[in-house]
Length: 500
Ligand code: AHR
Image: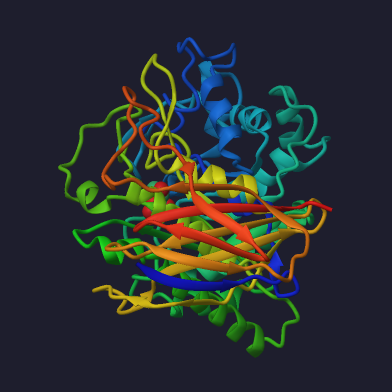
């Protein structure tokens, strides 16, 4: 059994936790929209076709913001196709996912759904096949109060009040060879700067996310961010990061894959600060980690080409206990970077590598990865704290030796609640950890929940939707020292609350 020590002191603050750290993503892809959040003939759907069971689970998940409508999909999307009378909307080919798009669901349906889900919308514009005018038109349609053709068209389409969409993504993964309308950093940087300028001329209150690399593995990673930021530093408010991980026959490396995510964030921060220095800019660029998750991508890439279909079953991965622990470790990593990571969107919300799964006509259910997200979203409040960790290293083939535990903590002065997030990365044996909370007088242990299982491959399913759920953990608090037992491969959320 390993041992570890962690010290928590509310005076050592990394940064305020932005609620949008618990964002998600709805793309027109597979069954995320059609058959996911929207299924008009489902018994749980209301008159607008929105599934109430999926809405209920979205609120339970604690999602705060949702990016829409893509993803790769947006790079060929004509937003005008998705507004106006549904009967008049065109059916088109979606080149990104080799699918047939009916456009029955569009901007107004999404905004209706977002309101009911109680999430902030994050809208992406098409900088693949389209450009400045279409992006500015969409902002005018959505956010301009009225008296122009586009804003009056919105009113005529049923939304008299402007949508007031605050956050906008300037395209998606524009460095990727798979992207329709892929661009070089120079091409994209110029286009994003000019599109962003026009969008902010229409509505100066909006915030913009410039596309970073599609992943740390891209050969242009780093150089892409630098060049894009040199063009967009003044107009953009965030730069995006995307990362997907999978277990590839090496559990130890997978369980520690947040080490890669941590390095990725640090490298993007360093690049932002380099551009800031050479531009002598007072502005600190923040990060939008607007796609992240576990994704068994190798299997998807190896699949043969499909026929054109409507809402095909695409990447509906079944997530294990190990996947849930790893998802907990990614959320812990965002908290460790709360000074720079403002937005993070798990990709995606329903069916597509998702915490929520649906069956045609049947009830929606929670995948294993639903639980770490819901636990962190419900408990991470206030400020994120610097949490020094003393732990032995465990070996990994991919990342070398890594500390056996990962830790983060948040402190909410208003409610007097401390939340501690711990990951045991040791795959062989557990770790007994002592958390020193002597700096917080008068707190009691409120709850300790853990995600782990003797069978790390266990999954939830439509037949057994609660096979993997959080369990009570083992811990005690004596004289300002919290002692917790962390079984191998486990994710913990421990909350303490002020008694006086
Ligand atoms: O989330 C699935 C896809 O992954 C998104 O469409 C794309 O941006 C990324 O490559």
